[in-house]
Amino acid sequence: MFEFIKKIFKKTETSETPRQSNLRPDGFQLATLYDTDTIFKSILEESHTGHFSSNYIPPTAHPGLKHQLIQGVRNRTFPSNSKSCEAAIFVFIENDKAIAFSWAIQRTKNEVELYLIAVSPDHRRRGIGTLMVERSIKHFTPGTTFIVRLYKKSTSMLKIVETFGFTIAKSRGHQTTTLSYTS
Image (tube, rainbow, N blue to C red; front, side, top):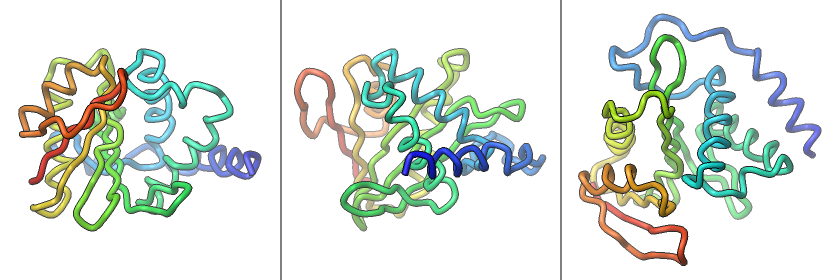
């Protein structure tokens, strides 16, 4: 199975030409296959710093993660062990490069998990993280409940989501905190 996934990912790395010049003025848009490698590298970097799960670090996890990214971009789904959920992966583009991304997964009709959000370290403290959360929330129907699970090291993202009205729903263990917000 991993060989199949590797072949799919290898094909898609070059299957899409660089993005055209029809970007939104602020650079926020749905991710394309052109962005998947940058998003993948960002997930690994953030996992190494403790902002995302360390489960992404082992090379044996990479084919599955790449497969999920491709499915998220191509089909707007998030494949999981129990079922496939609707998903959207957004990016913020600057100089034709993704410098931030957010991955939102619709767990139920009225609940969306802001699964992963990251801004490139060189582009932080410019309001891009706030914009990614805001635009991700606006993508879904008003009245939707949003869930975010943050690792303790993600203090900046905690401050951002609290400005939107997210409140602590529960703490889990010593590593993560779960917050929720209804739009």
